[in-house]
Image (cartoon, rainbow, N blue to C red; front, top):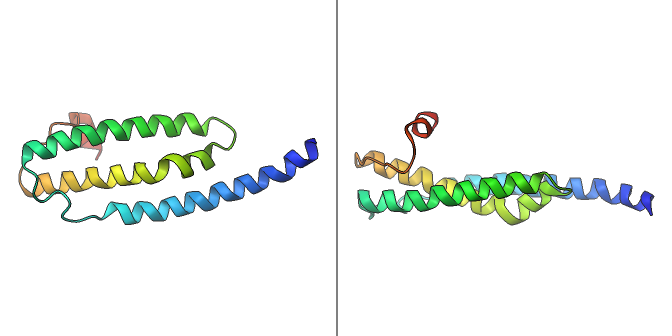
Length: 116
């Protein structure tokens, strides 16, 4: 029984690496969605940014917890990575749109804004 466990483990690792590579490619696709927030007012950008930032933090926490378990990278790649990439891309678009309009986006702390 234990020898079977050792033969499956490399397959799971290989699948996780493959899916993580796919998720990385998805990040590129989701990162550029120009114009999605062009019709939003500054207040709407702040409201949407607040919701998306909260979701980004929730997903980051879920991903961190999932990685602690066996097969965690596979779980992250399947369950969370795609949505996380979409949320992160949307936040970048909100920040770009807000900057173009000279909006004061208040949903991030000053320290978070400095890091980005």
